[in-house]
Length: 147
Image (tube, rainbow, N blue to C red; front, top):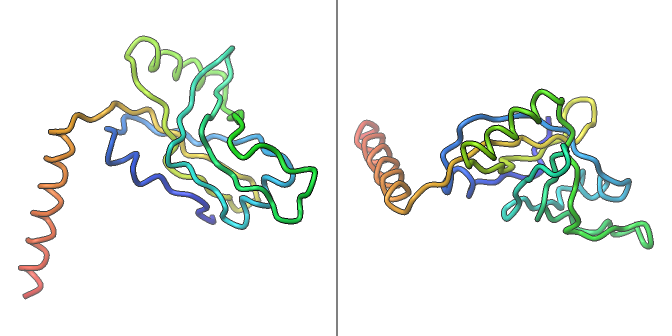
């Protein structure tokens, strides 16, 4: 498994409830650019429209040798999930008001591009401060244990 993009900011800004592995529909030049690691998922999110999960804001840089076959780097991309999973996600987003955020993008052993999609609840500022305080305390305890 080759990690292509990681969204560290998502774990900082959201409480992760549940994760799903989804395939992604890409064109030929997009997958070539993805294999080179030219992907950013920092500002991306997913929405459900007409029974399909669509990923918005994901940036795949144009492939250098792609000339006219290159597509818009920020175009919406369809995610591939089972119908039952999509129904579950509809319940989470409409009833509970949760958000769909991609955590990471990778290429699996069979050469397929996959996105790890998380059902997340937004954090408030005081939650973020508590997390940083816990992390700092852990780091200090580890340093003290080393000495």
